[in-house]
Length: 301
Ligand SMILES: [Zn+2]
Ligand SMILES: [Zn+2]
Figure: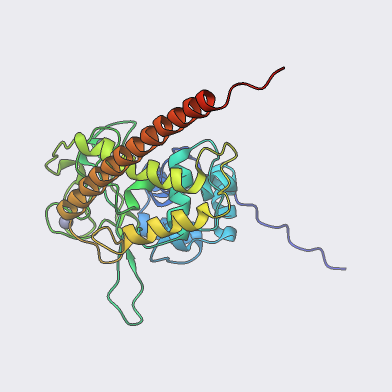
């Protein structure tokens, strides 16, 4: 019998950065190529097996398993960097829980779609301040969502395209190695974009996350949407995605920023009315109880 040739084993990559907990898979893959001095486009095709228009949305489990094997990280951990709707979010991370719901319902993921048989092209926002930093220089998963308009870390307004030429950010399409985050069309360093601090908006966009979380999970501790709540939350997500905050062919960053501020103001107003209503109801209940006590004497023991 002829001996089978020994199976070729893939060895670990010599450079293996850890994916940050809130980092997009494509951003981590790009950082890996940078560390190895490899051209991103070819490296990504070799590692994944095919050229994907949107690595974060389209990557399958077989490719994830390969990346996990090459990088020494678990497939489940790498999968949490994707934008796939079928993954399990960490149960201790409120924002990640909401993002997972957003991937399942509504249209709040930023992308450009030209119609017909064209594929939707992903839009990845970026914060120039973070990309210019050391530990903060990576693309966040949250930056793919239409109502994240400022950076949670420093309050800087996010850019949804190259600040110089307007091209969409696509790090893995570059054919030459680079050390920095560059526009794939004109080569402008993304970290050099003129930053604008909008600190107020940090709290406002957090309110939208909180509202979706409240509707879906209420005060449940096990983070499984309660019956009926699923519909409430889904309805809210669909309302959000039907207006200025739609993800497909989105409005510009300034309009989305305004929409977030308006929605937060509406939520604040609604909760004030709700609080007043509850306080009134509590007062009425106390009065009624007092009345009942005064009319009916306590029963003999
Ligand atoms: Zn930032
Ligand atoms: Zn450019």
